[in-house]
Image (cartoon, rainbow, N blue to C red; front, side, top):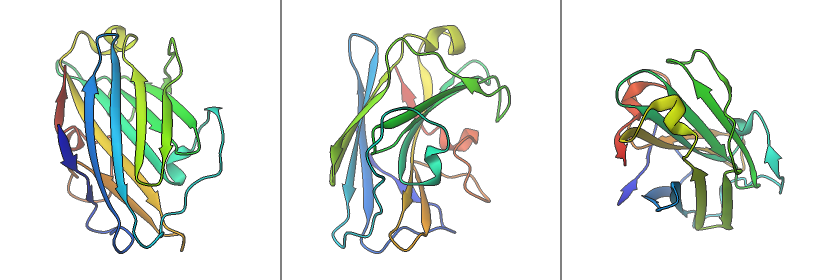
Length: 174
């Protein structure tokens, strides 16, 4: 499945930039998300290479996925920076109970320019969310070379950008 990400109306993206995503689940319980980025004017500021778990990735260009229960308020957040750094968090409810999510293997992101592929292990999510199907929000923060940030999602709630909001969980997984 492939869908376009939309910018938040109050934070438009850099001129000419567009994002679309496609995703699938493998037999080994791995979510793969392909972020297709068009940046013909080279306006995106890409972070320097880094590795490992790191907080605050959303403050710069970062691809994200939120996976939520269909039977309760719990959800997980994955931040995958094009630098190679990542973060994974568990939440008990909307923006509450945040803690690091233990993962059996690190989420990964690889690519360059036009195509970034993220792989996210899903095995640990059964304990947090219950069995699939789950709700899915695919999002991105894009930092432009001029320092402006835009917020991209399959869907946005009314008001300020808020990827944690239930309205952002616009797709199903599993």
